Amino acid sequence: MSHLVVRQLLIDLETPIAVRWNGGDAFTSAFMNALSMSFPVGEQFFIDSLRHAQKELSPEQQSQFADELKGFIGQEATHRRLHQLFNLHLENQGMVNHWAPRALKRIAKVEPMNVRHAVAATAATEHFTAVLAQWLLSNPAFLAQAEPRLQTLWHWHASEESEHRCTAFDMYKALNGNEQWRLQWMRLTTWYLLSDLLRQTVNNLWHDGSLFKFSTWRSAWVFLLAKQGLFRSSYAMWRRYFRPDFHPQQDDDSLSQAWLQNHENAYARVGSTT
Image (cartoon, rainbow, N blue to C red; front, side, top):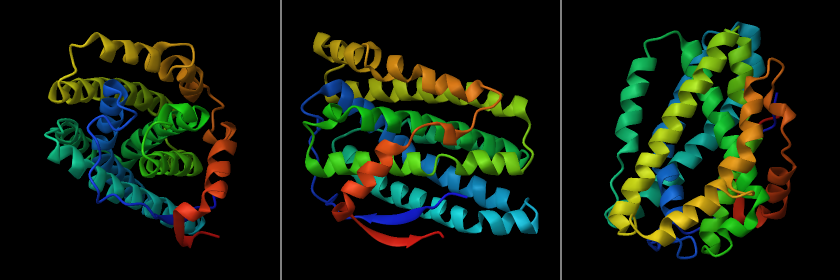
């Protein structure tokens, strides 16, 4: 079982943020804003999925997961709350969150299914967030021109996603989840996440007034598809999920551990699992 600490981030999210808060770059700001728009609904789905799944475990398994699940829920609830504050600034800038309503409709279709489906979807999405976290922490220059408080927000979130990357996967295995559905949910998650992310990013750029500018799409190419770009350099890590012997623990989390250790002044410990 993983050791998870719930942390209260000590940053100001009341002060408004700039429209192009990532160093004035329209595309990367819009892309990260789109991700943030998905988090409150997504984090709540993860929490609910694992809470319900725990009830399907044997008493012994429930005991084994109890502390880790408490830490997982605490971390995800904190992510949800802080990104709600972040998203309020986006609303005040005129951004419209189209992703969250679509996600809620899909969640409503999954909830009546066997709980293993929700846990499999959670595990797949958690792998995506771990992939993104690894890229963010490996490329500190990406947020170097953002305000320090926003650098802290995203690097903290990335570090905790890496820290609890095993929880949903382990619970799916404990539920004797079907391997075929584990892979199928990754395929479905990949399609929905990437298509929704693109649609919301485009919508954000439309509101920003930069959708049809050459500089916007030049930035997109470099950020996503250059040699060290997000999609190109992260593909191998994403693809590992399809290996029969895959486990999230196989992915290196030294960068997240280092960030949390080196930035203890950025947060207060609320609680931990032992």
